[in-house]
Length: 99
Image 1 (tube, rainbow, N blue to C red):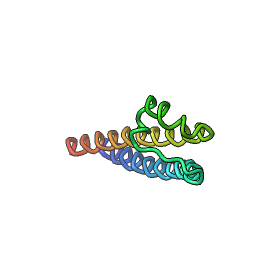
Image 2: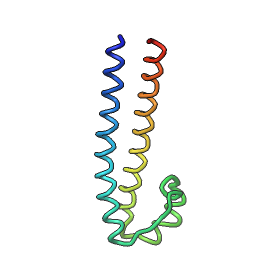
Image 3: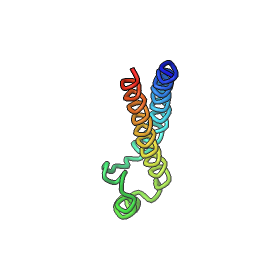
């Protein structure tokens, strides 16, 4: 049981590293397009669809799709990192308790 939990923690850590690199590449590709077109917005807009629709999309109507791609990759990356960090913490706690 101990070795299984250690393997799970190591596997999840490797998965988190892989996902981090994978989404970082995707986010930077989308960011590159937005930076070339001088699209600017704050972190508040990333987490609020309503503010994004009211304030950013009207300013940059041609970049609407690229903005959506960028925001979706950022949000998904945060969700996956949260889930994997929670699982690693949970399995780590189980390992400490089990030991």
